[in-house]
Every structure is written in structure tokens, then in C-alpha cells.
Image (cartoon, rainbow, N blue to C red; front, side, top):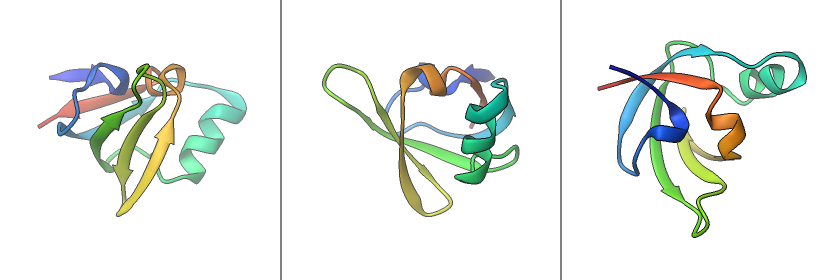
Length: 76
């Protein structure tokens, strides 16, 4: 089942399928290791739900919810 990263709950794991962003945001995500085929785990959300902390390639990364909505994940 494919979901947006912003729709995932803490503890869920999935694989990046696509990045729907464009321009500088897409390049920044790719530079941080968020590329198709990469495993992603949602660690936690901030108290007001923005940002979201994810684990990618053995490091934690915080993304804005607007950035997380650009990433399609195949949930395992």
C-alpha cells in the first residue's frame, strides 16, 4: 500500500517509491539520502505535528510536513 510519508504513524516502516517535489526541495531531499528504494522509519512527530522525525540510512532527519507530503512510501 502506497502512502504519503506525512500520513504514516510513528513506528511504521516503508520504502521510498517516489519524490513528487521539484526544484531545490527535491534536490535537498535526494542529497539527504531520501531516494527511491531507501528504507524509512517514522520515529516521532513534534507536539504540534510539524516537523516529523524519520530514520533514513542510519541517521535521524527532521522534515516539515509539507516536505513529507511530497514523498510516496510503500508501507511494509
